[in-house]
Length: 420
Image (cartoon, rainbow, N blue to C red; front, side, top):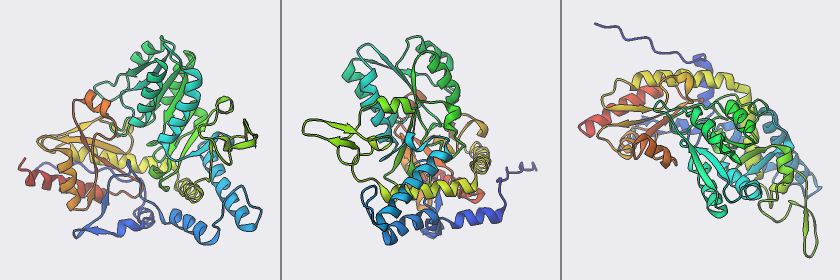
């Protein structure tokens, strides 16, 4: 009898992983008598108790508006809010002035499209995106290009799930005004060489925007090293709350850009017929801010910093390697994207011959296994792959080898129920 190969080991001591898992109250749930196996962190991560406590403390002890009052509650709330911004900026090697709070990554990208984009993109100009972008990094540019009679071009994705950088170089000969690229694909898991892409794009005179929504919670990100002009990400995928995202922008560009939304807080002076704007980053943060959400995101960043993104990457990469090995022998199962765990983030998209991804997700869900099923807001990529939808399992800091067991066992049940 052949001896099964030894499974890759997670990169953390079992007792430490138990402590990490214990930080997530929702993981104590069961579904239909099965333990909750949450494999949808790429859509929305779960929330550690540290983040919940930080937000609860704001509501119970420090509830006040920020930047306006001079009484103790308002001062403390402001310090917590701006302290979170400073912590986030330091974590990614940005600055507080270049760190803008938005509602999510979609809003961050739209901010750039509606301000920088309408200043710089005109008739006949080119905007370059890639075939693996999320709709959040496609639709704003479609709207802009349609409005300005500009061209939207796509960098091709190769059959092995990587960007065709030779094709990028071809498109750069058109001297595009903007190049947009996802740091880690939310479908393929591909980790793109964004520093190299930014270098090539800048050499061609283009501005660069990176969608870092998947990357920030998974791998160490150094914005100074990447040298992108704009970097957008969202809190709810990085163990923070929903309703808050971040746009990091190059200071000289942000200073030249007009406000995105007008109103209170973002002004220096309002006269009868005109107004002047306040300093960065508040020029882009009109109205009452997401105070609790920013505080929660700051707590999430502090918690991730204590874990260490190097450890997070090592742990999740080991899980992906294990999952790739366990999924590959399943009859009819085809994995999308790079075959090496070293080349991908902490997610795996797949199809199962004869089974619609929604059926796969529903049957797995009965067993407490939570995965994503659908086009993942990436329909151009689905067309490139020749599929209508995929199933996607995505891992997190709390994921374990047992979660992969539950996934594989659940897929055996899928094949049994659907008679595959």
